[in-house]
Length: 242
Image 1 (tube, helix red, strand yellow):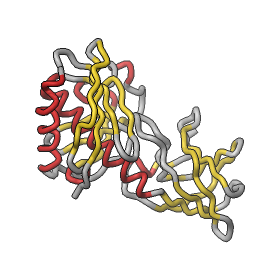
Image 2 (cartoon, helix red, strand yellow; image 1 turned 45 degrees about the vertical axis):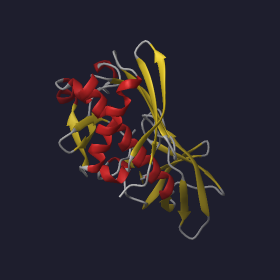
Image 3 (tube, helix red, strand yellow; image 1 turned 180 degrees about the vertical axis):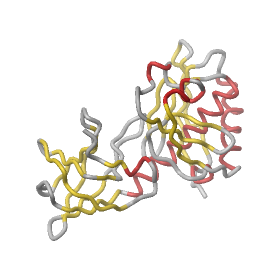
Image 4 (cartoon, one colour; image 1 turned 90 degrees about the vertical axis):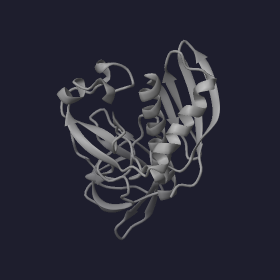
């Protein structure tokens, strides 16, 4: 259908935007454009407000994607009609926490891939912590310190983090870009989004990220679990970034 321009794909720092209501279905609001991230890849959806011109302010309590790929917003505090203009306001503290943790996981997974050939079998991001499941052979607890230290070296080097878009053929030619499953998991058709850490790592990704590794802050490995069959789970927390 393609009703929604997804502003979060190009600008993770956009906190406010204006849009028009283009559809309402069972209480789900679809806008002409949105900065609300709908969730995915282990990153939870955003929260925030929709402020109606000359009308109520509604709490955005849920964000997701329709079967057509449009972003919908579930709201409390009133009703919206097609054609109404709204101002969207992102819950920035929550969004920025997710951004920091998401970039931190890319740093850890990038180091784990380079040092140990690790792929990713799962991840989950929270406001105060995150975890990553690594699919890796020959890894044990004794290797955690080198992984943590090398990850924090990337943080301290203040490397830029940027977005670029490629075609599927380019992704297929570079398997290091997709580490969650095989090429069958790469979406068919259209352009694909890459998150690139300058001079270090690039991965297919649809989430929001900080612009510099230093913003993630020091990465602390809080918990380690051997889940068996090559699956190693690491939980991280972050100290204040710069």
